[in-house]
Image (tube, rainbow, N blue to C red; front, top):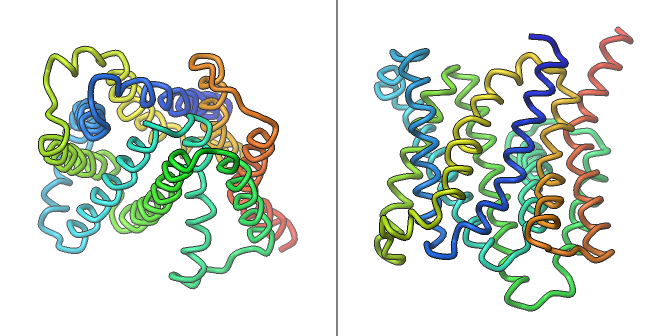
Length: 299
């Protein structure tokens, strides 16, 4: 697969992930957020599990009988459950643009955690990216009602849990390269925990699920299942710097879709805030790759 084709596939995945925010926001008229998370993740599980059984069928046993791999898998599934449902619950009040851009804050958060927890070195420009992200977040969340601001606060927490999710994925994949088995375990944990919470607090029913089937299918099959598979297939074939920028476009697609489909207008402050966060996220991802490339040619 050429770099161009790989980048195009990643752009499709980014578009699906971005527009899935619309389905998440519109898919809770008749069901609660935990019910929605249960349904979408169950469909994603049905997509990924056959791939795991076909390509990695012996890896489930290796994970289950290795205490370290099993613990990481369970921990990853748990933080994924928290992050996903905080985001989903916040979408009851928060705008799609806020949800998408504030969620991408997991990128600079990963850099900060890596610096202070794992003692990883980071480039000075990352701190500029962090400042841009903080300033952009302020512009996005200011001039809103207290209720919406509290909802946006849940998105910050969601980004924190997604950051830990990314770190745990990296730890696992360095120890054992089995993406489909690993994803299947994460998804089933989210399915079980979301179902338990929904049964206690939301009283889900098949009739109500049928009323939201379009949104659930879009998020479950396309976003959770197919887009994830596209990422696995194409990411290793794409150039890292363009791939990082393409992934960052997810929030842009979400914002445009929110404006076109849901008529969610952004004032000048929010537009500047989105731009600051986008620039900060891109700097965090691209600058280390650029510096490494410069050092390589100077050797």
